Length: 214
Image 1 (cartoon, rainbow, N blue to C red):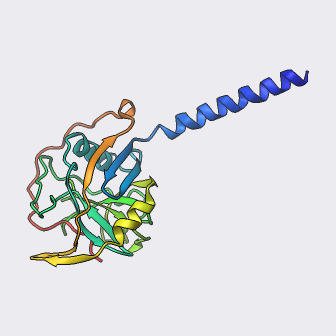
Image 2: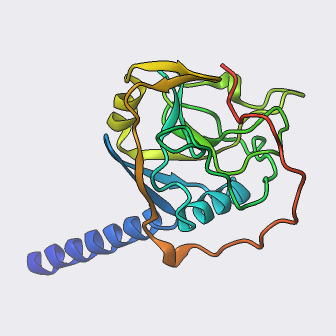
Image 3: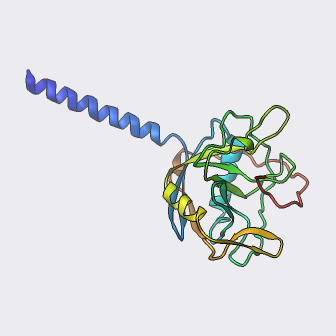
């Protein structure tokens, strides 16, 4: 009888772990391999389907490979997705996306959000990871915020390390790391669970630099 109870407990535990593993894999996971270490991101398509789809498509296009964190502000955020090591812009081949900042997700420490210009619907490839909670970047009343679409699940120490690097002003660009920190690769870890959305119709391009305002 005791043996049966032990076996039953083991089976329950195994099924429980399997259930947890299944739940853990229901959201897309992206790994950013950087020169400071790996950052793993969990994306939230139920809350931000357009932003998640856009980010995964850019990763699958190899858009992020070799780009630097070109704007780094300790205690605020680290930003990437637009420039190579010598600040040559890498232009996205994809159209700007609709702003999803009203999805209920907040710009807390370790969350990832889309960078944009003053046009709320201008985000393309650039993104930032919040180094601390930045509630001022959330939608408040008539003020449109910056759309959060995921969070760091491992590698926050890497985010901290990047946020601490020395920065400088280079021509028109501020808060540029003195020693560039590159994204080596950006890869979807569980492609089997992701179904791409239909690409949006072309929109007018934005000519401002996409930045979250401090």
